[in-house]
Length: 264
Image: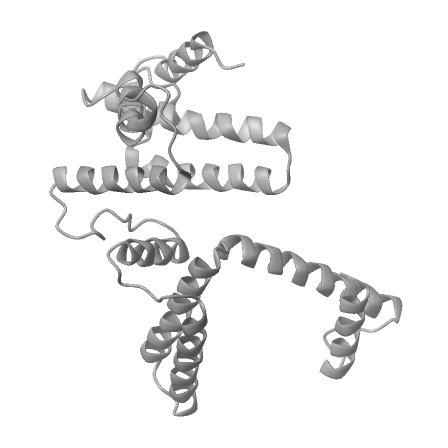
């Protein structure tokens, strides 16, 4: 169970690691910019532990992710910017603002959709206070591309710039695929192919949003399926004394179909 003693111990360890005289050379040399990639990596490892339903690993990975926050807090404290208490208070203030029906209204009970609207309205107000001119202003550029595409689309949808449902998007997918194929057939330069493929991926992201299917989860699942089936093909080829490098594609396709039939 997490306690203040546990947090204070971790903060003390971090301060010791960053000590100018007795600290760790590596930790002392780090900056916000050099730590940022590790934070992204740790977040993915948390996600991976959840996907594997490995709760022991999840505990460890959450600790690694928490350490990233503590690292930022220590560096900021050294620079006189903010500390761990400021971080905790900032998120506490935000959560209270975005849940007025919980913290400002006793015994409040409102539908989930209205709760979501209150949350969104509060975020809009916060953006105005920060001087944002566009609903897209604070969508982080460092997000994974597909995630950022979906966030941009969701933001635009809040003001009505959206498809009415998923079905019309299928036609748009076909349109974008046709444009990409046309560029490929005429031998277009790489920049044009990248632009057209980007359009395909962007509209597929929009489709996934309407279907309420997470693109990363869907692709992760399909990659795992591909891996299982390909390993089956490799195994069968090895058992037959054949090399995949020289095996005709027709034979590999037949093994692939067999893998599908067997549920791989």
